[in-house]
Every structure is written in structure tokens, then in C-alpha cells.
Image 1 (tube, each protein chain N blue to C red):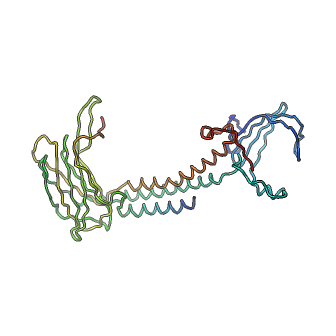
Image 2 (spheres, each protein chain N blue to C red; image 1 turned 180 degrees about the vertical axis):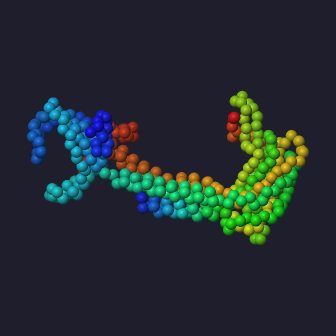
Image 3 (cartoon, one colour; image 1 turned 45 degrees about the vertical axis):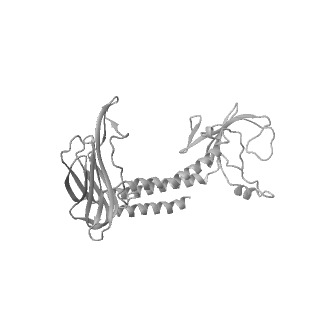
Length: 47
Length: 309
């Protein structure tokens, strides 16, 4: 299991360094869409 | 020896209490290093720290401590050369070293190394990010209406490949502003669509004053090649109390630091060590199922199972 982890961990680490250096971020390759605002939602917080 | 009843400290190692009770000699066979007497009785306690066991025996006259160390069935067979095959090991003995523990320890060390590398890389990459403002553009909008297709001046994005942050700032006040559009490469025509919404609300209710949102918003587009670009924007707004024109600001930043990849990588790096920890725990639960002092008593439920090598 530890040998498998050396392989998987190395791939993940290199992938992270490579993609971050190129400004690639998972889930953010496109600008993405947001719904038109409709007013205050349920996520407000109290001071 | 430092005795804290359930824990014994000896030679930089902690031994946990595993079993205790009274032992009585009923019959004797074999060879012993002390004089054995039928019906002699002692109080005994076993403490373990695999592969070692520390045992205490106490009778009316003396207290005897002894140390034992686990040896494999192969070593026993080699020493005694019994006729036929040795019995096949069943379960895990109190002092049997678990390879799962070694694997778990190695996985935790590797996890610390990987986390260290990833964290150093993140600090370096975030610290050396250009954070370059490629465009700052202001435009008027009429509240509560749509405004179609404004094109910004052409601007330059540095670096071969990096991310782009598109920021909007608008004077919203219990109202909202929305912008949708696309980042367009002036040479190739490649487009990167985006949408941003700016909302800021405040008020007061039975719990007191509250606020929601802010007057700025950011959207980051990943993996945009360098070159000349412009932006087409549609805007819309609502909930304003008047229709006096207001100004919004669009700012484009090149190569901004991001943190999502760092947190996801750290998260995925933990999966295999967690699996290793679960496997090690299963072995320890099995080992301690033979003890009256199991720290996993709630999981094992019973201490009556048998073990042996």
C-alpha cells in the first residue's frame, strides 16, 4: 500500500505543481454561469 | 518501571495493560527456570507493547516481573523441530507485530512529505504570481434596465498560459448588478464566457441587523493563453430605488494566486493514509478483542474470543 501511495502521491503532487504553474484550476476552466440575482437569499449573516 | 496501573513506562516504552487475573498451577509438563508447585497461585498482570510483553506475578512472598518478546511460528519450528506441521496461526496474538502498523507509519511519513512539498509549491507559486492588472474599464449603466454588448478596448495578457480574474465593482445598495459576457482572443477569436453578479443587501430583523454580499465580485477563468484580448459585456440590474445612471468598473487581472487546487490536492493525498489507518485499526481491534481492557471495547463487544499462534 505504501508503494502504491508513493506512485499516487507523486503523480498528484506533480499534477498540482504543473497545473498551478499554468494557472489551471479544476472546475474553473470556463468562466461558469450564475443565475440572475433575485434579491436577498438565505445566506445572509448577522453582525 | 513507572506504574500507573493501566500503563507501565520502561526503557522509553509504554506498556498497556492487556490482561489480569489469578493463575493456579494444576499440572506441569516440560522444563522451568523456577521451582513449580502444584496448586501454587499468583496474581498476574500482562502489559503489552508489541512485540514485547511485560508480565507481573505476585504471590504472598514476592513480586516477579518478566519480559517476553514475540517470535514467529517459523522461529519456534526451527528451534524445536516438532514432528509434522506447526498449527496454523489463528487471529493475532497480543504481542504480534502488525505489518499494518508499519505501513500506516510509513504512509503518515509520506503524507507529511507530500503535504510539505505541495505547501512549499503553493507558497512559491502564490508568492511569485504576477497579479498583473491588464485592464481597468469603467462604464455607466442605467439601474433596473438591460444594457447590451459593450466592447472594451483590446488589452494584453502576459505569460504563455495562466488564469484571468474578471472583477466587477458596482454601487449596489439593497439592489443587484449582473454582468455576462466573454473574453475574446483578438487574434484567434477563441472565447471564454463568464457571468458575474454583484449584490449587497442589509436590513434588520428580530435577530438584529444583517448584511449579505458586497459591492464587488470576482470570477477566475483558468488556462487562458497569453495574447491580445477584449471583452464583450451585457449588463442588467434591479431593485434600485431610482434610475439615475451609475458607474460600474471592470478590472481584468492576469495570473492571480489560486488556492482551490492546493486544498483539493491535500484532500486527495489523505485518502490512501486514511485507508491504511482503517486497516491498522481493524488489526488492533482484533488484537484487543482478547483483552478485558480493550480501548475498542464498544466496537468489539466481547472479550471471550480466543487467540493463538
